[in-house]
Image (cartoon, rainbow, N blue to C red; front, top):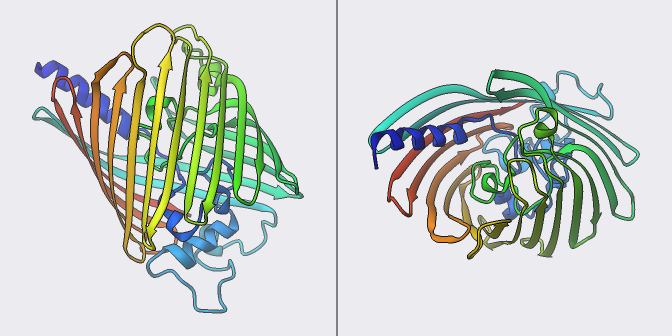
Length: 377
């Protein structure tokens, strides 16, 4: 493997990991019996703005030292927007600010580089009343011509009392497990990265032990607004069954029609999450990827994420992952991720991650170190 190929692969790894991140859901909280994204988030597919209840939970149940004394759990302190400076004056409107300074170092075949940057600087807002939700996010979005401030997720939704819901606008479609790491092999290779929202219509049914989400739309929103040859009709389906408060089974499917530069493709997968011990969460997801043209076996994404809460607010994670290419079962990349997450105070989240990628054909190693301080105000 030449030094030029090493430089190219290092640049690719940097590009994937240095794009701005989002305030995503954390599947590790299944150990706290939070099996649904809407327990804490406005979005039915997770991530983004926290509901008032989600803000309160982050203080009372997740942070190391943020818990309020008994009888003082109302949203008037540090769990509220800007530490409660607006008190309750916003009524049915919820606001949030997401800021994430980061440090990145990538090393491939002895070639390394580092970068300090602001991964996220977003403003989030939602209005919720009488079963209706209006939602929007505004923040930094990178483009080839430089950083641009844009509204990259916005939608309107209605949830009826009988569990039937409808949503329309720009959103990330429901598929599999939405991990906080947008570069995971069950997210980025499937076209479920942080800026892969679609314009679409989503129908859902929420029951006591099951959740069904189906969406259709003309395709990736950025490809429609800024034609890049990737626009294609997109449909997804996700079924979640809560076997008990700490055991979840998820089945998903995705179809994308033919685009100018991308052939027709699709994916199907299963995910299973369970809590064998009170502080231990284990998620496993397997996806098969197919596309028009290449023969042979489908490509596969395999991922396991095991999270252990050592003490309140301190989580350790390990995540082995495998990505293969359609038609070439011996190809692809094996990744191992080690991560430590600390939630010292309400809405303060510090994380340190180490990625080790090994190319299965060339045996080239890429090592990535990422440190983040996530402030959710």
